[in-house]
Image (tube, rainbow, N blue to C red; front, side):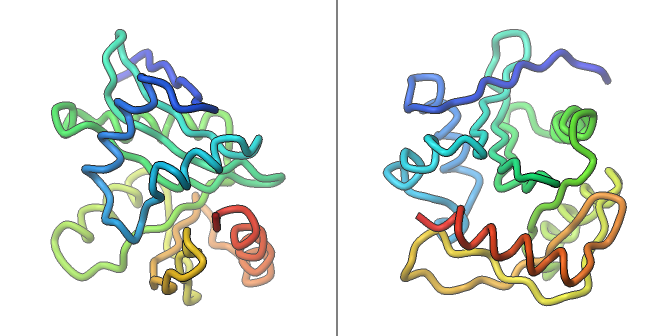
Length: 175
């Protein structure tokens, strides 16, 4: 499937952004997402891309990521439930891979069928698990660190690269 998707980057809160925010709210647990107020603050960061994804003028999902010097960190990817099961999430990732080869992301550790499916989804696209312990950078200062699995595209990350990336993430992601 080769769809023509439009990625609309949001740097302020607009009606279109708020529609994609509904998808965000439905698809992620509280501890894995920002509040709308927190989101407003990071929208101004030049390295942050909060994108609504449209196909033929229909909002189908969102892709929020950070673009750093050598890599892309996918913070959130969600497809609206109406469009799920049509390989659109795969198409979004493939579209991003055309522009960026050094991509990494976090997923919940595999503990059930849903988390196992999520891992298989990313593995089919070429992502692999890194062997070191990883915790999500808390979005809020008082939030506890959450253990997650770090995946990177095609190649495992070196521990030195990971430490460098994690330091930058701690600076940028916390509101």
